[in-house]
Length: 456
Ligand SMILES: *Cc1c(COP(=O)(O)O)cnc(C)c1O
Image (cartoon, rainbow, N blue to C red; front, side, top):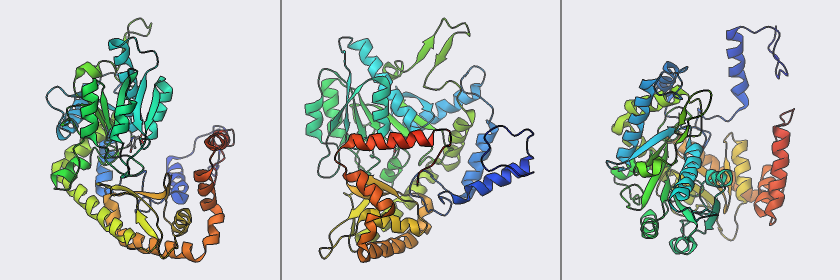
């Protein structure tokens, strides 16, 4: 009996484990190839050994549920350890407290909720809470704003793609419940001027969250190695909380982020307690009910296995590889980096060379034709990379393919009117943004409709 390709209902009888596992292997074959470093996002791969070890740690706690810390005390202890260890390299100080969440998005959503509720408690006259964010802030904050009904007030970027400090000053008003800065931001990899923003926030008595989901497990170690990293953590007096994802540069299993507050005066507004449920008194620190124990155990295990030495050595590899890539990109006619990011995340775009410049989305298409999985930005039109240790071995091959791709794009510019390049170009350039939203919603409906059609 063959396992059906797309079952629409439960099979009458189950299939043997080995057959199913074989099919799972086969199913992957058309997916993005992260194992060979062909992806520039989504997977943070340190190597087979580390992954096998983290999987075992996850497996040890596969069934345990961190929903109830009385039942699974060891999980609560590990969660506290992960928070304390993270807080220590973010200079959290003696009052710092926090939680583990299921990922960066949950950390960001929770921070919005926490500061909204802090304002409800301390400044109850605020009817329409606002949060000040940069245009480059991660989209999880837009989601949090929507979910928790806090108005996002956008601040433009300065010429180096960082949150504009003067604009922050202007946009804070009596309804502001939160300011968010990034270290670094996802699109451009820039660290916002946290010291200046922190001074403004502190003077106005407004909380400041630093979204270091991406950099939290990288930048502190880059700094220890002597790289110039702007101060972004609790050493800045105005910073009240920081998020840092263990499932990114912490090299843990997916489902792990840390959200640290300067002290309990903030964190207490995150908690949910309901005393009158027939099912019992219920208390929960975050968004989830059932919380996978494996993600906590894997994060703990990854941090204990790597130690400071491991994170330093990975940071060194990542920083050196990033430099090699940025230098290489600058040397390719018609291409150049966006800004001068201090860490491991960057964008690269088309620049004029002898008055000619390739369509950057076409360069992306040509790279994909060579087996790379490429992420596109729209402001500015650019391609994007998050560098991991896995990329050290393939940086040369990538640069060579990129040089070829740029050459091909210059030689056949008409291809930019076809395929993905045309689609991304259209999306980036349509002035009526609501049109894009409508089209994407249509796509979502068909993707999550009965047939589950995947575009492209
Ligand atoms: C990844 C990321 C997030 C969201 O994290 P997820 O783990 O993808 O939910 C938030 N902020 C920044 C800056 C990120 O890079």
